[in-house]
Image (cartoon, rainbow, N blue to C red; front, side, top):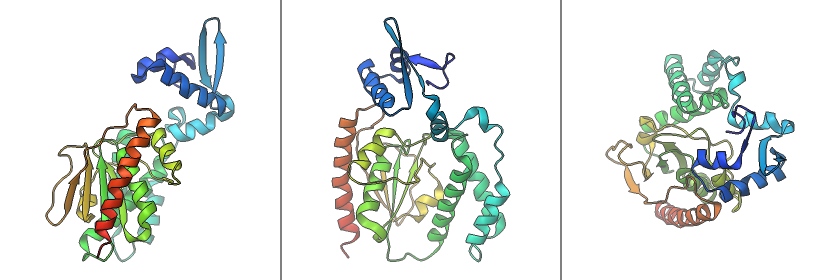
Length: 272
């Protein structure tokens, strides 16, 4: 919102109105962003303007996607397909890989057309192809859990991050969203970092059929009936508060609630 404002700067009140949050909440975050050199604070009389610090503008564009430069970025789909064809040689033909790459790009571009679209397309296509291969093979000893929420930017990322940390290679973990956002929420990343959990290169992904088919356990969180039901899968619905627009203190409580549920699930999955 700051970057795209007509003046290249904005006021706390405008941000609060646009985000549907209280002004003290916005002021707190602006203070943090100022301290970290992301934004500049510019008092003018009784008003205080905030703009992006030009020293970190490239960092912001890397995170948000630079729409002004996006139209000039040419995605080399053939190179992505070629690399994945080498990776899946003997498993999938080139036509299948090309279709999954194209579909993955279109699905991701619908929610975020500019941010790291090339690398995310390759990563999402890889996740889908792995799931497709797994769904077609006999079930192995390592169970797979799919966490699904609406935006795949909050609850499902919390659960997946914690399960990966606790289970290691004993459980395969995937996430998806019925209406994915463009990026994982900052409060989620912070709440996980506080307990030593990194999301790494994770990003919101659309819910796809092969992801459900590959899973042994599907955990839904507020996404209603968006997830298809297939026989042989275990379905759990966790009634959890949506962290959208909530302060970090609320997200911490949600994180701890999810950790308790994840620990119980892990104990069940590894009991044998």
